[in-house]
Image 1 (cartoon, rainbow, N blue to C red):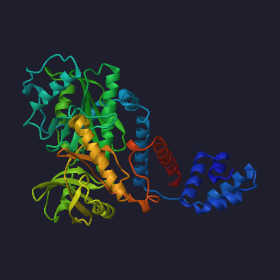
Image 2: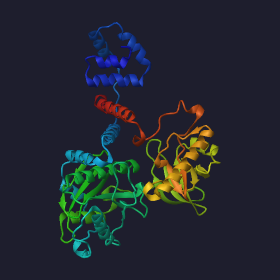
Image 3: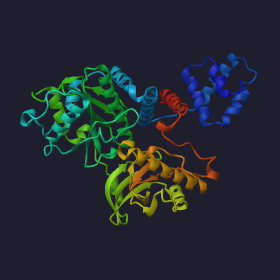
Image 4: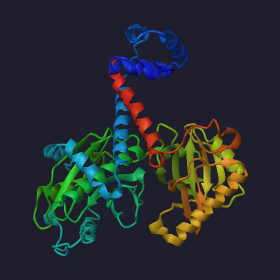
Length: 470
């Protein structure tokens, strides 16, 4: 064998010792050839003794508790992503089943989270107009919306039916009811969510509801980077369960509780408490990213479309400039995107830069138009969707003719405005000469299974190795 990693794997070393040597070689690739040469012509016992001596030369790295927690969090999220790849939208109950197998009921703890300073009593509400029996999920949904509408003026949040509008979704999850801060349904302003089914006595529907809700929790933590926990619920018209998750996806649940619209029950009181409680009790804090907009010439803030993460993510706002709807994007480095958009400025299917500069915190910003909405087949219809995709193909044809490759095409980067499609987010685009050396881009949703697996195993190996570095 000529591969040093294969030699190390073939020897009778412990798993931790093997990981320690391999990670040291990954961090110091110049050692690989010398170590391979040193092991040549030795029998296995001699190779093992040599590597044990080599282990003693590897310095012990100290990692803070914060670093360890962050890596473990990433591994947990990757495990969940890997688990989801095994299932399609028709078997999301498997994800929920996995959740229920790992989270035991802790009713008193969940109840303590949902103590409201301004509690609402069911006796103070008029529920006589609500139907007593629902034949299907759609009727259950309408019953809850009618009930929630009766709470307007008594709660500070807005409750939006997001089941029919196809918002806040991905291949295996959605949110039926979104509890939001403000008037627009945006990830940055999502306080919590409720998933509704016709029945939770049906095991498959019960598991499916849990799986969808927890999957949405994961997206919330990705989109609200500083959020520490979230509490949501799954319910039908006579049962409800509350789910707590922290940012490491450690879960707690209340267990199934009776829910009644005609008599006071623990389940109904907890639901009313969740809706009337302070938003901080559900783990939500309003985004403050817009404070950095002070001093940006001419841009009026409306909403946070996306909060910046710790990687290559950007901070994105919607707002107005000269009374025209626009998008402001901010990041530490937008030079590449500015360069690409300048080259492609004559294409009518690519956003136009109308302002640029620095925010008060030093980040670069660009303001672009138009400010469209993300492409959704159910919202825009087959004809509108096909037209938008045709426009995106024209954008790609134009960019390729100018030797520019987008490298991150997905439905998330297509917006629709005034019967036209636009291809946005050119931050990782490359020209032909730089394409060979350009790093991989994309998300798990659009990555191949081998890429997801290799990332998972690398992070898992690092996490297993951490205790030996403390």
